[in-house]
Length: 180
Image 1 (cartoon, rainbow, N blue to C red):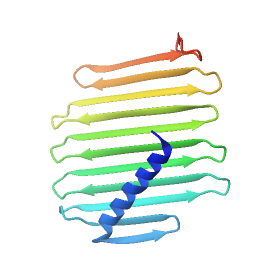
Image 2: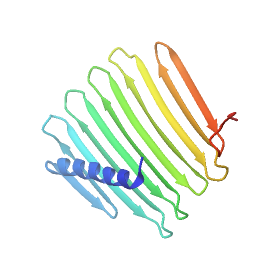
Image 3: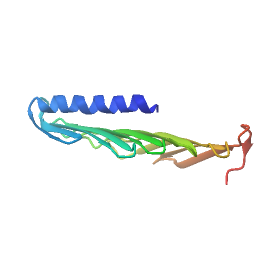
Image 4: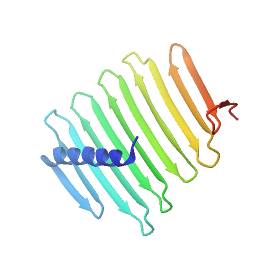
């Protein structure tokens, strides 16, 4: 995930949700925050929020969230956040979840964080079908700026076959080493 793109995407998602909700909704604003909610054309509700906070030492937080239902028991939520620390550390997360009236659901999310010590990226998804069968997967990679070592891991779960996990560690030269 690239942080500037994520921030733009979050703000666009939240702004779109607010614009849709504002057409038939109550719109409220506070310092650094904008929220909207109301009925939508599908017989449900739509809401959205965008928040930005700026700290005195260069810290900042930007969050966006949008949720919608259709009046038939289906719904979806998308959300994300970006943070910046005073010492240059950054972090971002985005996710989306949908639930259907038949009981099925899906979720996707990812995160990225970095500071002077290293970085981590992770993304994954999960689904549940109408019968309750589950599948899940997640991939994560992390690199130390101090040692140059890194790890790549993945996990998956299937309610029929169980859990599997793998991890591979690398030294600064890129050679595979034992994970500890």
